[in-house]
Image 1: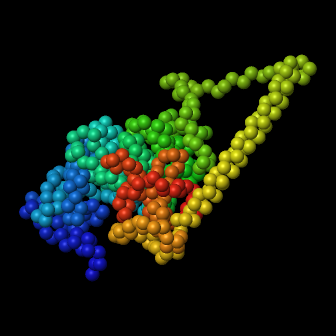
Image 2 (image 1 turned 180 degrees about the vertical axis):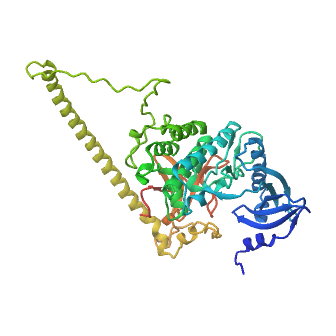
Image 3 (image 1 turned 90 degrees about the horizontal axis):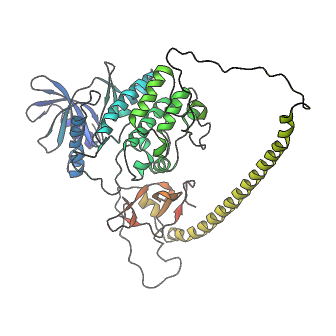
Length: 489
């Protein structure tokens, strides 16, 4: 007996016939939006049918995104994009897509199998995926959900890119708008600008490709978190660790490619899917990656920046052998007969003294800034004591924030007279705080980081915490919360 009502509903479709022509043979898988079945047409043709869940089908926006998948794939016309054959609506009103039936397994399943997937095989798979994305980006289509489970390896050795259902289409789409606060994609593979509501272009897919390669090569995500909110904050505010520091056995050229794809700043990533594919093809052919940082520039620690402007050596012309640098022996000179040696000594001493003076100045500046930050934190901690008064009055704010599906209690009307501190209503920011890193990427976070909500601008131009159970909450007056703090002060 199955305790999952959704799975039970999906299983109940097995054996039924859609529109008098498609017989449902078996259930392939169930996702958050739809279920996929193996089916047979009445003329004997086998296919895969993707049916939107009834509770999802009531949303006009999600129906439109589901139907948009067929339009996006049809515009691509690429053999490595899964082919959509038909679109229709079932008898119970659920839209469904008829797609080609694939034989094989996803990249995620292959990577975690006993045999795994080798570095060169991964490069070949990613090269094909980037070819599909290059065509899609040229048509104004951004996939936005590239991940190992959406890359399928067929038994014949081919690659298929799945699930264009949440693709962003600049032209020819169904004019679908994302609701305020909604995030479409899978957090461990989403770029920072995608998580924070920034401008999305093809470089978001490049980041997802880098995150996919990172996952396959290291068996871990770019960032890890015990809770979804903690992971969301890390992905939106912290750069990815250098691949070499996590997987030292990966070749330097592949590390350089992945590091550039995962650059936190979009301007430092590959500008196009084609540029990244060119480096991968070079790595496959000659173990070189001119577009990526040179191996000597790969970060050796997480905090140091990625160098993308390191010079590269020009390749020799065809038929021309690379020559070693010429070494000319120089007769030794004595200190008495070498004026350069004697004249350089004072300059060397001055340079050393100057470097030491600069280091002392930098250390002094650091100590001043550090002491100022400590003073700010002390003042903030003192202010936070007022937000904890609700604990004395029996309020359970953290319980209300622990589940986005629970119904919030209506706020009590403000009292006209001020009571004693023990009975005074808690401040408006007692439940939420505003997380800001370097003045960018704001989030509203709840106590103990149970949940994080993006900050959006509403129709009146007011910045609010969007998607909270309590509705839109103006961020004015919310206290700051630093990403380095993993608990309330």
